[in-house]
Image (cartoon, one colour):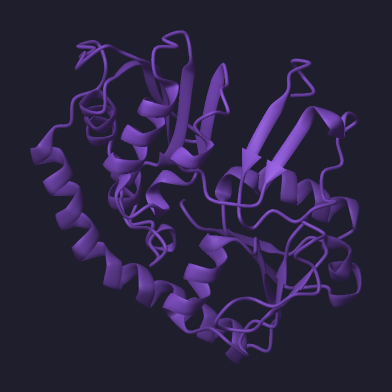
Length: 276
């Protein structure tokens, strides 16, 4: 809203008042509730939904509701972002699988969902080092298929699934050996990233006392604890005195940024990443 001098309405039952730090907070209104047809009177030129659709138990019902709320305003642009399951399977990204996700979408399944719900998909691509699907669509009077967009090769997805099943145990065994070796050598390791990847990594491996701290730049998470395993979440500056021997990065896309932050603190730990 700031960048485009726009006005916005956000729906989120977990929104915490007072956290908005923009220069023009009056441009944004937050409603502490799930979006539903109760709010169909709130019209927008852009409907944006990031990292939420995969948490909804009936995605077709939700997307259809969004389409009904748009009605005949065919210039409305809809943007959705979700994880790409093909990457998760191909790279055996077990840290991206957790119980809060009701659905996992491939490019083809996401496209078909929106076409079924009377949208014309105008763009569908992966971003963020291939981790997420970005879909842009506009309302259509009926089913409208864009033949230039991806179509799933089911044989390839089936092959990826088989690879995941074969690689999962090896991946888990690798990380368990690494953590056990770190502990046996008396070294200190920290995780960087307290989000869902970090939670899934720690709980899948059942890591508790072996790693004491998780680093996160989000100041609202600092001082809290990791769900399930209990590690204290700390600010990056904590590492100046703690001086970890190993930093395990939960998302490799941030590796250069994190290494730069560590260097500025005079630290040179061994770096390990997921997704590489």
